[in-house]
Length: 446
Ligand code: 5CA
Image (tube, rainbow, N blue to C red; front, side, top):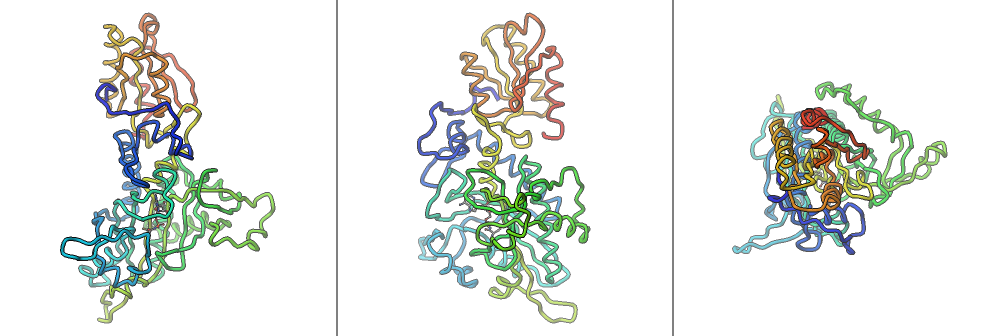
């Protein structure tokens, strides 16, 4: 992309209404624009990051054997009356009446809709297990939308629903989600700790939230300091190995780690004092096992081999996809702006032309631009007639991992400066090795 063709409404001013750094940087870098309280447009740069997050989420879900689909945002009220949640959900639910006076709602979650799909098509135990998921916009009329897209009213969620024949199988589905979520967060460049959590309006008695530690996080958390060092790394996950998966889950959940709602002070105090950590975190996902709560209310059964009917065991599993973009910025920024992890960066390489219009310099920039594009990477070429300082500040603000600077001195000496955004280290490379260097830096992160 050439910057002169792009839409990047950046701003130097720190917005006064934005309290946390991710919200400030998203506004300043032209990623989002508020359209109403808690409702945002995703401008081209923001959308690119959102889509990269979505891609990682999709890939990790499908590795775990979960099936993508798409349900609508608008749902009929009658399904929610069947489950008994229509009244319970209260003012957080946006209720709509269509021209035929039919009651509808903008979905805050999808347990009812998916249970209806399940009962319409799945009749036999032989068709189980099944996990279906989608990435779709949700609406919750939050009392206090704040921190930009972190606590929005309209937000993008990955929500998955598992259907199993019995409790052990449903726990296995829960475990698949727990581990695939850990993989997802790690791939994105985040560490999220699973913590025992309250189930709220979704229901059930078994749930974990995933928290990214951050001073600005809305959730108060209490955990054993040992939890912070557990990682999957490059460990291969075999999702069909039920026992292996359980062992991985145990490793990640055996230490004390709870949110405020489920905190147990006497248990916490049993930890050695130096391991008792109280902190704040951003909730980037939550998984629930709730058994037959919805299948019972909505009569979702399967026929067993002996002809009898059994209520299906269910769980639901959510990732805050749009919130993750904010969490990523909270975890990866410095005083100059965002520092994108390679897995989610909107562009891979920033190309800065220090003397736009100079035949030789323009030619080298074009050459690098074409080479990087041909390798399947996404460069952002600052081809504006602007001061060097302004060009550098823009690229630092929007956080592109590598910056290639082409100017008169470099051209004279046949060397090009390549700077790493996160470490701020600079390398001088011969012109014809710049493209290969960039490709190598992004191997595995395309
Ligand atoms: N049906 C279940 C799981 S599919 C569910 O709705 N779970 S949830 O309520 O915990 O939401 C899942 C995730 O969505 C949360 O962990 C959080 O990361 C994100 N989320 C929830 N509310 C908001 C909000 N107002 N703004 C942005 N993200 C949100």
